Length: 494
Image (cartoon, rainbow, N blue to C red; front, top):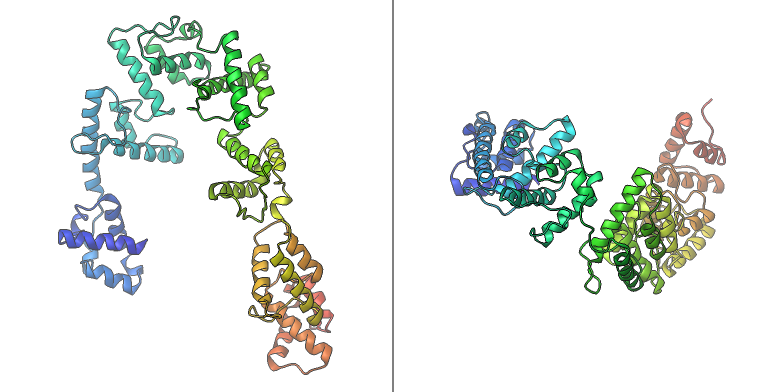
């Protein structure tokens, strides 16, 4: 990253002729200017080669002492952007109508506003109050960064514009003359009125939608009994084809807007749950179609589960070991996340995962592959010959099989899992200390000392020094290390 920023600075210096640190690196973008100033302030801590590279673009030891930050320039830029925002709001009566490609007075205002919203959310999370810049923008448009979606705010402004033009929002008649999309949005606000934030209700009141008018709104399609039966038929047909009702919001089935209808049903069901009301007849009917049509987790999770469930039913094998290599990359990543977060999942999610063969235990085990069986056969033969799996080095080859490197990989894998894999359990049965909790170098040296002890060979000076070290450091050794040492007559110093 340092090198990339340096190349950007080098290209800028070649194009502009000088970086001018004494003036706060004018004409550089904010990120580059900040990076250059940080290099100047930390110049003495840089690697000599980094200092030479900076000298090549004019930032010598003498030049960096004169460096100034770009704060003054950024203030100027913000004031210019604020003026553009004010001009845009004067023309459109809102700042939320600006999309990311909106340009005002030569400034990419839409992108700049998106950046300011992101910075304000971070600032609020840290300090609990809006930033000074956010307050300046709030003076132009109080709802430039609302706590709800920008789409909601844009739809509200569209409705307010019609009201200001003399249009009356007739909720009882289904909002005639407002256009299909806006009428749908207004009807949805009436249906969800009790779940809206107080500020949203205040805004709706400004355009004539109060609690009373919301209750008197016209019934939407598929809300009376006859239309619900029709919509339920579409839901059954969709479930029969897809195996789930976790449909995307824009899903249409045989011309019926099933996704939007299901969303409305979920909103009602969740409102009933929040208020402690019993499940409605509509919710019970949908439960009979799909028990997980309105899950307490995300619909995206449910859709992915259903897709994998269908593959498993079709004969697709689900092997864990954190790999799931037979699945597509996105599904593989999803399955790995379920393994990692298994204990944090909802009990019903764990039950659904069990239906596809992914339990807490199976998530960390899989049938031994032919390669693993071959490796274990070599490990058994090596253990029978050497009475241990403590190979002296990773490059050990046993009958043309790279046993040393294979065991090293298994030890590394075992360190990153809480539940042992099947192959690791088999290795533990062969040698309880194939993967000891102490440094493996110690274990190899122990087996060298053990071999000298059993054969009666004199110990080398290095091995004798190791033995003396174990006696002097006895109290800091693992209890099992102490036990292993006593089996070869190594005891603590008196």
